Length: 306
Image (cartoon, rainbow, N blue to C red; front, side, top):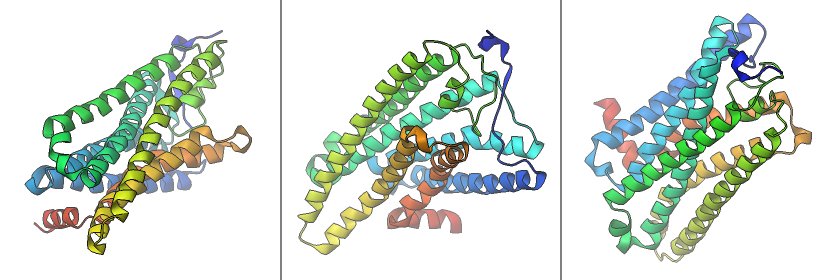
């Protein structure tokens, strides 16, 4: 039985076999990556430079944009480089780093989306206590808790995955190092027990966050529907709907990707789901948040036009 120390590199799943399609994949991913860099970069710059946006909602949005940039930068550049240079290899340490940072950033983003739901709940349902409950120190502590939880979660998953002996080759059926694909290479008798243990912890943690988000929005919608003026309801909905759209996109794709029945699983479907939850959201989120936010759009337009 060969163990993990004998594997120097993994082979990732290529998007295409022909050179023309490889280059097409490279340019497609480059366009998406540049769109994500531009959109999130503009949001980060706008929030950091304009004092009117120094509020809890925009502070959390800035953190979300940083996490989105980190997520897409963890997977897409390596996939682009492999297509451009016509290779499939990723080093063992590179694969471990990719797993760690991707899981850390995705977990932190889920925590942050939960915190943003709480921010909207307090702003709409308890507006008189908003400054007390979401002061600058409380916001920093909550953001730090989201980042810390993500990195702790990633440390547990990475240590569990790469401590298992791997004896089923080094070919991964995914365009980046994904934990389920690495576990398929293991021949350890304890891999299923350890995998199920961590999966139960992850699902329990995710379920708590999901319930918190749902309860927060139930209370928000009840409060908004009691607002007598239509203009007031429109303003409240305009601050909540972008976050709700991002949460729905994030949760639905991730849940389907990891909890879909094995009977409908296939390499092509797994690849599509990975692109939808790892590549598309970081590029789309800035558009969703700026679409209905006039204040943010005005600041971004001033940045663009000088």
